[in-house]
Length: 260
Image (cartoon, rainbow, N blue to C red; front, side):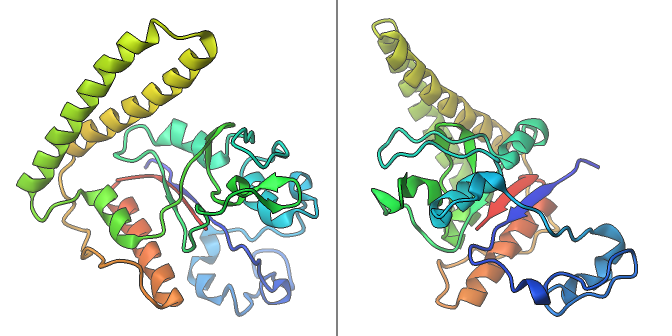
């Protein structure tokens, strides 16, 4: 069976005295925070006493999300020239995520994308907006709206015909963009050509997603109604996101997720 991997980030951490087992070895006792994992004792490890040198700074709010899965201290900047490191989820997506509709999904419960400038010391808000970086200069946006996540996974539209019409429309738009880009590419300098190449790589990813969507059949095991939007209750919001992650794994829509 193809492995799956997910990373769940809790910004304010855990009460470690109630999280870390007081004993080691196979017979350790679960504390109250981890008690619900006890049925899976033989399939998990609880690791503690680690230190992340790249995040060892007073600018903890900005740097922790970016360094957590990359181990790279990002470039100090408050502008658009952010530079960090490829994150572990994207390394996994490149290896086990290329045969699925979505190589990875990036979810959150809070939207920081509207923040600009310096969020913490010398580091811009871009470093706290996501856990996931596809390249050192390409952070991936995290989605907080369950309805949009559902539509990305299963397609917009109330039936198969409407979803196919949407895919056909998307393909025709991409064909037009590709044709214009090829003509533009001949007249660009090296730096602008590299920028356009990265843009076209994103276009190719969208095309790949459309092809996967056409080849995919709905999984009868997934029983999840389309969400209305963002719930008022934080607990319900988190629960709904985990339900979507479960459905994505069940239907093999993705094998990699991050959730902040």
